[in-house]
Image 1 (tube, one colour):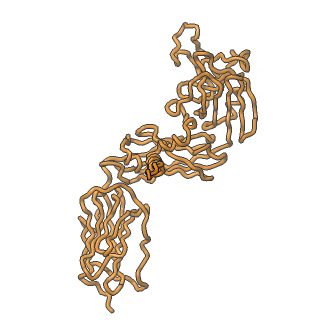
Image 2 (cartoon, helix red, strand yellow):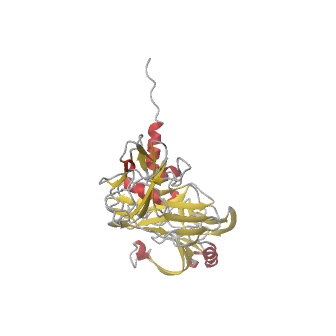
Image 3 (tube, one colour):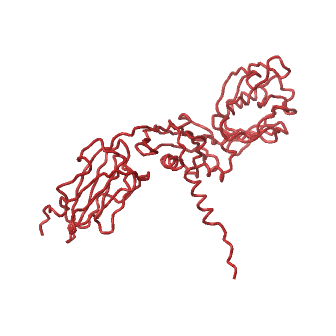
Length: 417
């Protein structure tokens, strides 16, 4: 039987003006064939709201492929961009029509492969390519912290170049943000603000692990006229599990490395009215010298609580100015009384040891204080003070899943008999 091109196997491939839900997904590979024989050219004429090779196709318009004959049908359509992301689509039961169920990415080059068969089962194939126009507005993701080595408490941050408020748009963004850890961990994103997300595992990172964060958002439609832009990936390494636990009631700090106590240090914490915050904090950075002034926390100059001191070996744990630092002026109270204005003070020798021992991302926990609880966000990294079940609800993806599960498992009253 001759498999020359036939007029009844003409396919039309058009981009219709419509707006469909966001999302890209994987589908079948392009190399499958219903028969072992080489497929013939299934279409001599193809139109798709332009011409093959176009570079300005509107990504808002979905892709449609139609078989213009009752004697042939479409068996498969694969449309993929240069990054390998395949467009989700639906094929009608009779094989007469295929249409995309997700929008195309902006500024992306696509190849389309249409497989057909005639009434005798002979396979046909048609290929074309085109490029979509760039998005009007770009959403860029910047990951943090800077590349380097951190402690087990370091969260990953994702800062967006524009606010995203709509829950559906947030889900698109979050679905495209990826965090890979070796060894692998259970973790989740939390929307701190409209333009800021934090990622943390259920418990601290494993010591010695590697964490990589990256975005697949490039070209993806987030909201009307807003598309993802290219973003730089991030890679950090996690060091030993170093934890410092300060008991404000006993005036002692216990420092552990990988679960083993390596030092116990007499300290002083915040006095009444300036009590140190309770809870888990994360080391933000280290400063060999800091000039500390009472005016920075609202204490007027010249009052009894006013101070202006040179401070050495200062390890910062909040943005508002809480440090672990050398306090040689209070050595007589260290281990016995709380006399500071909120910081954790220790001798110069102990502060130098602590300064050299910890790194950004290490854990500093305070218990037994009369102070408030550490804020989860806004004054450092208080992420670990949020219970895991509440943390999950800060995810645009997991929150809706848990709500649906709660509704599904809601007990029902037994009917009266």
